[in-house]
Picture: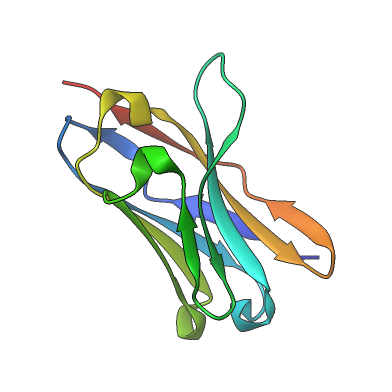
Length: 115
């Protein structure tokens, strides 16, 4: 069983920045894949970014060049640095950990981009 908890959401103006954190129980260096998803009101949950154990990252087209995903094995934490935020980035952001064939989700953290 892997426990996952997100933090770092909040209200930010367009063009601003936020950094989300995802703390996981256990050693994240053992997880083949970690990812961030988001779900806006009335929309399906979508993949934002993923990162492999080896550090290979992939991004949704809508966030390329603005968001950066990273993982710190020493802190058992994954991050999502979000810059140049837009109102359409408003959503609940979820951390996903894939381990031993099972997906573990956090409870989500709200990000609101508004002036």
